Amino acid sequence: MSQKHPNVSFEFFPTKTDAGHEKLLNTARELAAYNPDFFSCTYGAGGSTRDRTLNTVLQLDGEVKVPTAPHLSCVGDSKAELIELLNLYKSKGINRIVALRGDLPSGMGMSSGELRHANDLVELIRAETGDHFHIEVAAYPEMHPQARNFEDDIANFVRKAKAGANSAITQYFFNADCYFYFVERVRKLGVDIPVIPGIMPITNYSKLARFSDACGAELPRWVRKQLEAYGDDTQSIQRFGEEMITGLCEQLIAGGAPGLHFYTLNQAAPSLAVWKNLQG
Ligand code: FAD
Image (cartoon, rainbow, N blue to C red; front, side, top):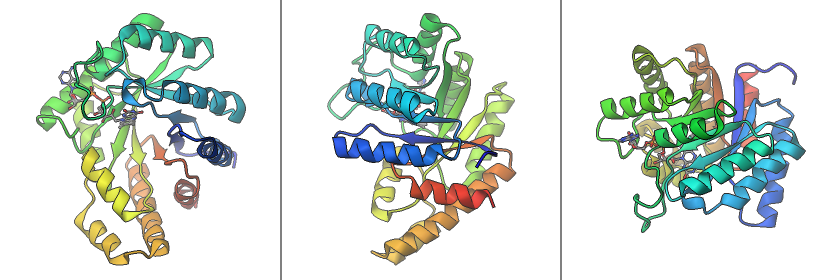
């Protein structure tokens, strides 16, 4: 496939085992054939995946040959550690980064680390590396779960954009209206950076329900009911999920979303099925 419309990117997480890493590379090679704009690789807050994220990013970028953005979160890491990592990425020719606050594992207080919010990290990146990095930040069309209210959360998003972010990737959601409303609100506040919807393919009901509860993504009642009704029938869950997510992406693209960012969970097939449906 040589033409790509809209822009597409794929996210991975660094694995703990050699076998998992080999699977990740195979997934990445398969997805690379579809000319994605970039890959990204997550980072465990507090630096728990520091080396694994670094190695994965360098391998995807250098060997699989798709520009790859490391995620970097600031809670739990010192400024010196963050700066060291930024300079290392810069020296290796990495020029896109996803800047986050991160979520520390329970038990580690939010006070560990010198930067408390993602806008502090964006400021640090700009101060230390100028315009070298294209900076992505996170956006929450359904509100960040810890936000006091929508107004505050939007104001905090605007803060990140004004600190120097170039674009944003959203938390996943299943209701296109919340995305359009979020974009409209931030545009009225003078923020014009692209906001790319994060897309979570549906492959497994119980994991999805647990994860959605934790990250504040609403699983609509009708979807929950439908998925529950399938029980262990994985094939039906996947067929329904593919249809539903394809429909969501079609709505987003028709409404002007500038691209799609797939949370692959290191699997190629679910994201590719949706992406191929969108190509017609
Ligand atoms: P922030 O933008 O700092 O916001 C966090 C909360 O603080 C919000 O409630 C916000 O309203 C509030 N806030 C923000 N700024 C201020 C301020 N200046 N003053 C007061 N309040 C403020 N997590 C990881 O650990 N590793 C990853 O690799 C990772 N990748 C992600 C990728 C994407 C695309 C997304 C959407 C999320 C990702 N996350 C990741 C999860 C993310 O770290 C969590 O959602 C985290 O709780 C918030 O991170 P943030 O960067 O959005 O934080």
